[in-house]
Image 1 (cartoon, rainbow, N blue to C red):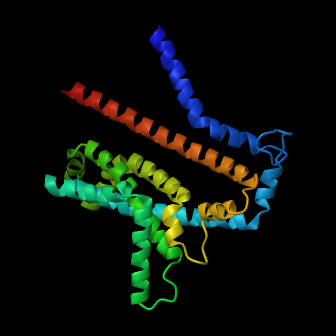
Image 2: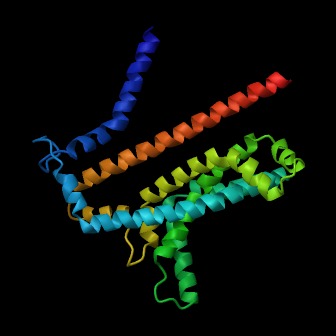
Image 3: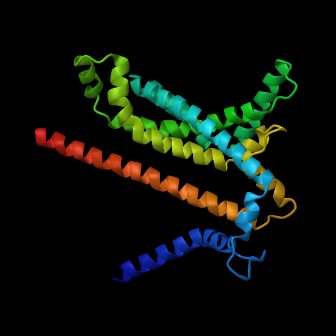
Length: 277
């Protein structure tokens, strides 16, 4: 009984430590005054100012365009890469490819950002480009670090799939392409959705890699907020952070629902297989 009580207290302290800063942020985003120590009254003042701030809204739009583009490209490429890795029969070659794809996740962001910047500058000068860094270099950088997360989510779904399903579909008259879309793609879909959500949130959140690869004509939200910290961060940024928090929370809940539904189907399939045996 004492162990259960201490475990609950310990869990409560951990959750308080993790979520207290977010709770303060949410609370003071509705504060009428600028103070972060005195709640002078409930107001939507800072939300109104946020939606009247053209520079911040442009930065949000740029981040959304970049994140959606990087997510679409990384999801397609990551799904194709996971499917190809799963088809490799050589165990050592598969392990080598898995290790290589994990490097962008393990590598420090500052190393990835600087190395990509040097590569883009080198290629730009080699082709005589006036400016080496632009939206396209940022897009390539974001696809680079989002890609491994998609592969990491899709590959286990392929490994859980019954290998006989695509062959059975082709035996029943499906072409390999039709068997892929009718059998394999639905099996990969939960991993694809989760990988896409992870890629989107990582792209929206990234600062270090974006900072080293940003062009003069394109500014994302994290870089915009960083430029504001040199002067002062107004409470409308608390309002923006609150909106982003709830959007991210909704995407996390969607990802958990997809994973739970996939786990339920997997358990049901295993029961049916045991029943046949």
